[in-house]
Length: 256
Image (tube, rainbow, N blue to C red; front, side):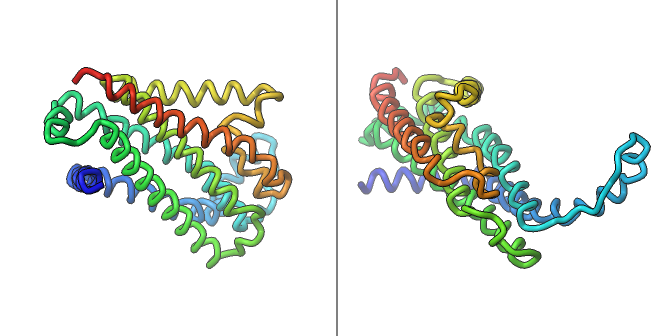
């Protein structure tokens, strides 16, 4: 356990030294502030462009802004934050391959599976920290300006969106154990997400795909019940564990 914790500490310090940690925090803080800010500015922006919109034959009516507007913006922005996360940390394994530092670490007695677990735990911790900071900032501003109770199933919707990010991180680990460059890792993660999206278009498969966890608006509006997402939660969790489990034997056999 001590070597695992020591390696995790080393990974975290490297993340801080390379400014990735600061960039990640600023990114999620910015989105957390941006969500209510955009909601607050919507009436002003519509008023400013009212003349232009009127010229096109459309009529601008009074826009009612509330916490639901801000939460809708939150769930629109989290995929962007997740894409940024993938781009920032897609090299978490590949940089070790290219620099040769992983071989040096392994010669000191650290098992390969511990490297996989340490890097996975680090990314999960950073994603969890950043995501819930963004949620907390948005929640605080919404509570100050409006009333969060207008959004049904808010914490459940936020939790399943967080779980989708966990699945994406597990994909990063899997493809990092297979490939040696971060561009390939990013493309494979993106390609898998697109494949999941295409499968979700099939009515009979939709309820089982990870993309089901991205449907937050139905939950917020009270249209969907939480039980509808149980199958997708189970499948996504199993897929995530399978990705980590598969990456360990691949890493054990990978030439360095």
